[in-house]
Image (cartoon, rainbow, N blue to C red; front, top):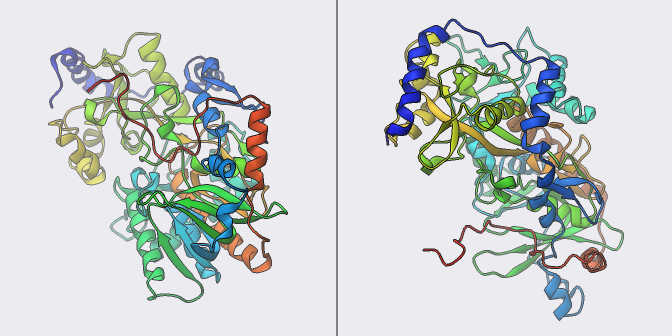
Length: 552
């Protein structure tokens, strides 16, 4: 689908200004300008889109309305408790028993499973969809690690803290950057094929907000490559071929819908739902690792999302109901470059690597209006301002606002063939619609990308609930108020590994009592006292995209 006549006039202006812009460097914003831009245009600052949470550990804290509704919803087993004697479902033999139950089948869950098994635990990994159906698969740009001579974990630490508005938990950031070189070496040893120079050295590039070239990539499918290797490694250890210590079982299409606690408030397992049969299943476990990923499919403020189909914030709901505290749930990351045209791929990720390789951002008149490598929050806010206030955005035939991402500059700056070599998946995606991004710029606009906040954790992944650990996007505090490119693939591995190790150790030292649902009864009582009627049961499990109002 080539560009329609409605945008060709703007496209001609972009092409006409290209030779001049090759010699231009747009200035970065001063700190005061950045703060002013964010407060005026970033979605996190839109007051009416948020409200206070009305019960639980974070009562009174600000959260997106969509997330607050889900956090406050009735349990999916509430009706069961009302119709039968409390805990009746727990009287039957469990469907499974294990040392460590991992809820979530993305990169964090897989990393946790490998380290828990390596440390002697009997592991059950259960996931909502197929093993590997996760945001990890869609992460394109790369993974950060300070492993070059001109870099250090200390410099990486400062970049992470600065990118997060210096609001990050310092201990979590220290863990992140300290483990980063180890994680790269671990992934490479497992078989991840990172891009390399002709002499075999790992190739690194810049990302937005980074002061050093520390982004390691596998072309533009880094997350898929990492997930491929982690999934294969888990599978190899689950089929009896490699079992140096414990074991791993994998269940698919069985999301957790409630955690189980004993009388002392310690984790004792979970209730799962088999999506094929609708049957509820009880699992007894000495420790649980929540690795359920993000919540983009709640579509905060109506934004499209890059997230996979199952990203509905389940882990936050389960952990919060069990008594865990949340952190930074009032901040989401809107990736500045989501696809804005054609309509079939609106919201899909256009990796930051495109800008890292040299692509500029232009308005409807073919003029630069922001440095292409500002941090993601600033970049996204600048896009919104250019379209909403300055009226200098491109409007597609469906009414979608957009700006131009000047991808052809990459080959002009780096040499012919760079785009095809470095961004093969993206080139193929656009060619499906007759757009050649090596010759034509592409249209982009911010898309809901990442859950900056989540369950508050310690550096080992533990929470306020004994025996409950959290890793990956479901955890909060690592990235503060904004995540830098390449630190999500890093954190799923760093904290997945740490949580797996800590959960295995916990399971050796602690034996939970009988599983109970008393915390759910207390939750439902608190909901009634707060007058919270009319909310849908949670977790959501899968988003509802059925047409409303009798439309075809």
